[in-house]
Length: 277
Image 1 (cartoon, one colour):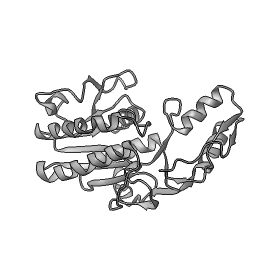
Image 2: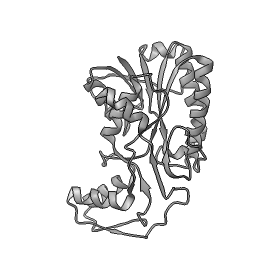
Image 3: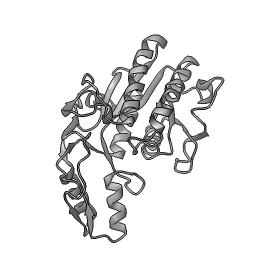
Image 4: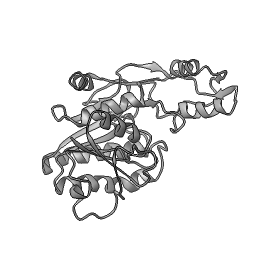
């Protein structure tokens, strides 16, 4: 297939491009900064918020658009989220109106808000950050648009991502930088929260698998379906890397909008992966 990927030079995007290429797909990698993208992709520098006469044609008439581009994804209360919301929605609508039929978009566990337990495609949402509110509104708007405009939408809801940690902004990235700086201690929360952790390469594989099919559409959790405490995952991460660094538990308070335990119901992605592998 021909796949266009926005945000292709980002933390997740570069891995999605590599996975799609490894599966034999032709990839149009779209971003403002193209330096982190495989040379095996067709690179296209494009302002997704600009005015395009025929967006479907401008993106190379892809069979599917994977929309990963998003500013300040790790800064949950950035003003960018609400300011750019309509532009993201209009970008997808313009793509479909000009000929696109299949769209996959990166969602987030932060759409859900405070919740305890597994999350499936029917779990009610009550986001507690501007990032979550913007993603939630985009999903609701575009799910309505699938009936209006007649296209397939896969909303790929991600959870807690790690891997390639020198380039991210997660706690694993911060810990990686601290260890490389020679720090022997690392200030930490209580670590009691339970999350669904996934390596970015496994996430990329799920994103591509979900995007190149249209049997399962709508909300799809791209996650493992397993709950692990933040403390256990971070201690494992330190051990795996062989670092001499100790966590200082309780230095930082847990964020009030973080759930004590939230993880994915992975039923739909497991069905997709059985056919992909």
